[in-house]
Image 1 (cartoon, rainbow, N blue to C red):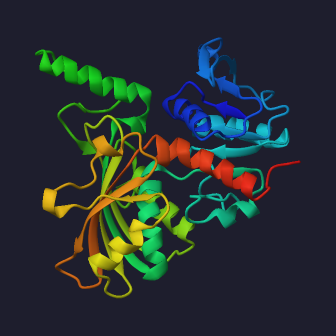
Image 2 (cartoon, helix red, strand yellow):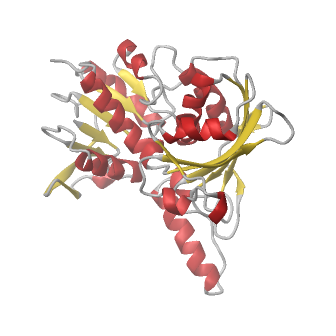
Length: 334
C-alpha cells in the first residue's frame, strides 16, 4: 500500500485509520513532495521513511491512497494505475469523470465493481450530507435538499488549522490577525467558503455538493440548494439540512430509520437540548444526526442538523473503507 500525501492532515489520519482498523498492510510506502523526504512517521510501532512522490513510486503497490491535491493526482495517478495499483483518490480530479466510481461504502459499494483503476472519494461536505440522507431516501425518495454548511478549518488542511489557532492567540493578546491561508480572518469570524465563485453565483464547494450527491445517489432529478460557510471551528463540519420527501415523513419515523443506519449516530435529545456538535463529532467515525423536526412550512419536509469529522469520515476513513470494501469484493489483483 502507498499513501501519496502522507505528511498532510488527511494522510496522517489515513495512517491512523489503517492502524486502528487493523487493515491488512504488508508494506506501507509513504510518499510526499521533495520537501518532506527523509521525514520519519510512526506506524504500528515502527518509524517509516517518507519518500518522494514520483511516477516510479508504485512498483509492487496494490492500492494507492492519494491525498496530495488534484494536480498531483492528475499527474501521478495514471502512473500508479499503469504500475498495477488501484488508486483511491481524495481530490476532485476524477470525481465527475463518468468512468470513475464516486463511492461512499454505506451507499453505493456496488459501483466499485465498475472501476477502471481509479476510484474517487467524494468531497467531505458531500459525504457528511449523504450518509444520513441515503437511508431516508431509500424509504421515502428525496425530491429537494436545502443545506447550509458550517465548515471547520480542517477542510483547508493542517496549515489552516494552525492559522486559526495562531489568530486566536494573537487576537486574545491584543494583536492583529494576519490571514495567509484563508482570504479573511477566521478567528472570531465566519465567511463564505473560500473556493471560487463559478456557476450562477455558487462557489465550487457548493457545485461539488450538487453534482456529487446526484452521482452517488444515481438520481439527477434531486434539486439541491447549498450554501457553504467557513467557521472558526478546528475540526468537524456541521450542516443544517432541510429535506423535501416524496410524501410526508414523521420525525419519529426518521429517527427510527437513522437509529440503525450504518455510519450514523443519532444524537437527538430535546429534553437536554443536546444535539450534534463539532466538538463531539471530532474523532468519531459516525456522522452525528439530531434536531430532527417537522418543517412547519411544508408537510413533506423535515429539518435536521448533522456533524461529521471532516478528516475522518469526510476523507481518510471513507478512503480506507473503500479499500476494505475492495478486499471484500475481491477487486484487487491476485
